[in-house]
Length: 398
View: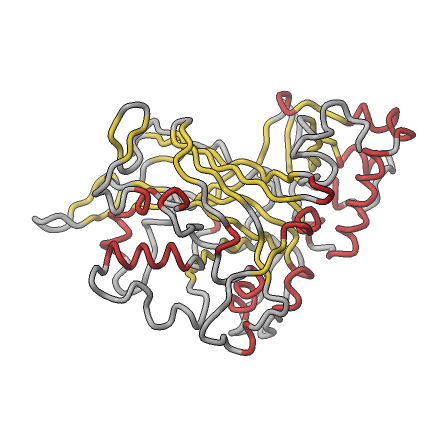
């Protein structure tokens, strides 16, 4: 229980305590922790000697703090929990609590590299049926390794940033044309933020996942399906993906998700030795997708075939190094039912089965549309932990 008014029973209570970066009007960015509908100014707390992190909490992004490693992450989390639960600290801490309505939330970390995976068997099978009817839905390599691609770190943006409709080449019966995408889509995903780096040439073992990954963010990997379909042969996603990737303003630490780890789906055939994570665990994260305020789908992350630890091991098996601020995303999260898919490509079955939004028949995103992703996980002692939401509104192409 916390002494902070309104925070008990909140999905942003003391069992969560996600980290973010905020700014008051005219001020410099500051690191904070969310508690209920308030943010605790950790830069101010460190300056006052209430929390010790070697000055890392006084920086304008989380990167220096994330690089300190799990013992320091744990120590700071325990101290912040103490400050917010022991009433003896009220007088010192209360002046450092600021209402969320008074601050601007910023991208919480400098993104070093961005990698996106393709780890939902249901999503991969749906895409296979849509694009390769009459053929096996999964390609031969899919159950042997986590498929992924290297994305563009410079276009990762914080929740609330407008998404400008991308332009590019797309195929038509008369040949390729250049112009705004007509099949703009979403991808509901979970992202993992790396804190501790690794040396070039040294793979990271599946067992070391929690020593490197600081926390989790919701991700919307906006996708221009018509640009993607024309360009991806033979090298894969490029301009259809690189125009914008939205992430939460709050990074939920792995320690807040300790009660959310659950057995992951059984893998058959047996995976390569470097991918054998024991125990084989995924996360019980329940995502919801709202399209112009209407709930359209609820993707379950627990169904993902490849686990976050396996993704990290595969990302580095060739000796690729990790850097503080690396972001790797799960790929589109989809369950077995149409109401559990993580893209509108699947929801409308390639645009052939429109859905009704606010009385209108819709397939892909129109200018002015707003999409919001939210997610929750089970917390300790029956509590609920919320991930920071991800929202974006489509602006006209420029």
